[in-house]
Amino acid sequence: MNSGFKWSRSQQKYSKSNGAGFLKVDFIAYLKGESQGEIDFLISRILKHTLELLLGTTSVEFHQQLAYYTFEDKMCMDVFFKTSSIEFIADMSMQFAECYKYLIDSMGDFGQADDHPKYSDSTRKPFFDFARFIDKCEFSDSETITVKSFRQDSFSTYFVGDGTSGDACFPGNVISWITGVVEAATPPELRVAG
Image 1: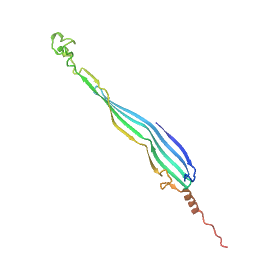
Image 2 (image 1 turned 90 degrees about the horizontal axis):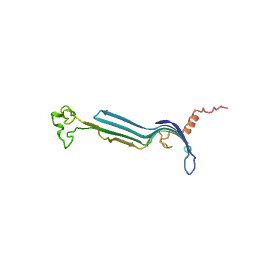
Image 3 (image 1 turned 120 degrees about the vertical axis):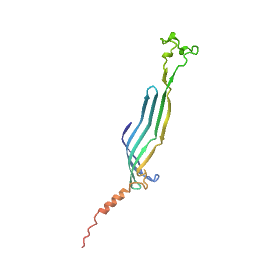
Image 4 (image 1 turned 90 degrees about the vertical axis):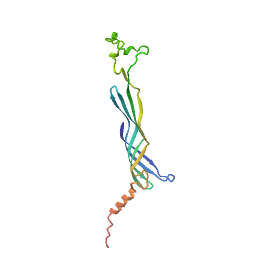
């Protein structure tokens, strides 16, 4: 993850062929990065559960732009938010306990369940008296499924202005406005009767 500030400047000189000229200064605050997390949940000997969250490389920029359009004599301010495409994936994998009980140790010898007095004090066959409820448990292979996959294409949203010198231009024809205020504030000439 990284963040910071940057600025850029662009200009286009006025000519009859392009019909417009401008000077733009753009101040940008940005945040760029990717993230990955994992949550593990384990119930010993029964269940192993993993949730993996992945946020792909994404950048978010907040722009404050001033543009002066020379031909139209307009100063426009744009404030907008811009982001690259966003991709989010949530994968879940589970492993369940698989337990086994040996009912027949050998197909050629069914004597393990025989209650023969000769083997009653031994762990050798028959082991009926020494048998366990479950002989062996192990986790199954991991099965992964995608719980949620979300993708949003890049977009930008303007809060002030629209990036052009049109009707959304704010504050607009600043030079005319300033000169109008100055002219209105100038006191009338004193006329001396003679």
